[in-house]
Length: 490
Ligand code: GLU
Image (tube, rainbow, N blue to C red; front, top):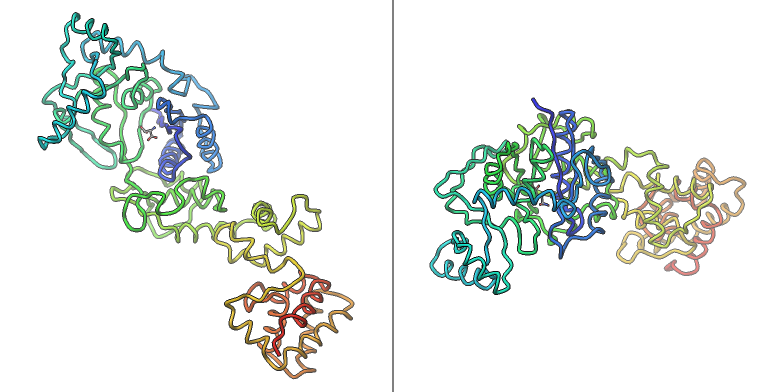
């Protein structure tokens, strides 16, 4: 087998979409599996919508996902430049060739004329397509058009009555009739190539062997095959990956929630989780296992196991996977990743001392089992911050416990012992609670829940002993005083 060479060719007209990320990932897994070459190049011929900022954002999302490339923007290579805007002069000789052989021709139709033709065909119940008005203009007719100030676009002359076959590695044999395809524009009147044209020249000149991309491009493929044929290029193999649907089975869109990689990154999904999740959107290895490292994915990936049916984006599954990868992180690393979220929520400042960091790590440790994504961290740990207590509004159990007859005595006793304590660690706190239980004659909920609610304002949360230890005696004393003075309902 010749050396595999694949590419990811985003248009920089928005951030990297989940579907684009999945295409990039499949290409990357395929390249790495076959020790092939991964190219990343930019399709920026849509001048109105392409920006360098989006290009940077897309590349940054790829890097964050751990998808690297051997050739292309940023890294260079033998087939550059890798932005279409910088490749225009490379395309010209091919356009000249197509014009000279009559496989392409100049079209002088205006937008208005084309639109009128479209409407006419629609009114007749026909599929709108270009009917070839400029196919056979004489040199004089062309001159007359130019004299009117018309600038020509260049159209590809689609052969008539031809069966076009795409042998797709995922979808099998797909047939198209050339008669359903009107002569299509390959170079616009402003001199810029269209997608279907530039993509073929790029793929052919770069020696791309396999094209893995979204199913939405399947209908473009017959046009692209015609160009390969016209220029005597050997076509690559195609593999069109199924669409990604939302849970209501309609095409995934903003309605379904976050659609760009950067949004998931900002919410605190880990790249390992997103890569694992995206890999399983339309591909599955044998067996039931769902958690895979990058190395395992590379080893297992094959086009034979890419599914023809659409993949459904299940956010709950992504959360479950993310929670899994969060639990696998060393707590120090997880804490670092949480800093930004805690700063944004105003819970911590920007320069933490080593001591504060180590305290924060212990705090994060108490809740890491509950985290599905990092943006949840402020809510889960806010109980560790501040000196007062806010009674959780809808927490009936918390209110109930504060109304117990014994609560005041429990809290007074706890306050006294906390003030007298010589040390403040888990064994000491356990001892204090035990003594209070005996002295006042309470146990279970009336003891532990009372203290928990008094220091945190809620009936659930991190392990009580860890909470008290990490809050430290000073804050515990302040909070219990606060509760005794403000919240106790007697
Ligand atoms: N720029 C195209 C896109 O983003 C690439 C299509 C292709 O891979 O051929 O959809």
